[in-house]
Image (tube, rainbow, N blue to C red):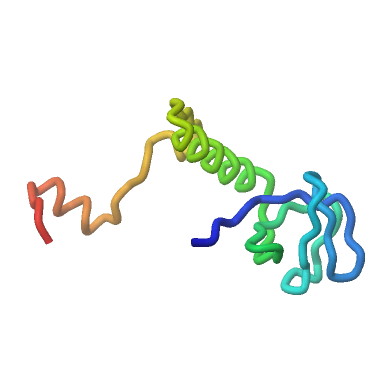
Length: 101
């Protein structure tokens, strides 16, 4: 499984971006990326641009997963705090008492 990591660019040199954490990322798929932008990186390649709010939510969720893996309590705020939700059709089935597929 590949997990996307939010990264903030500090410098751009052609198709190579430098990130706040010191890593480099391929920007071939995001030629419009500029220093200060947030990108979602997968295996060393920026796949899409993020706004700061979305980057924060993703980082918070990743921090919560890391805490859970260490056996620590995880604390989420914002939309992620309510936990996962079911698609409407599955929620309706659950509310109706259905327990099997």
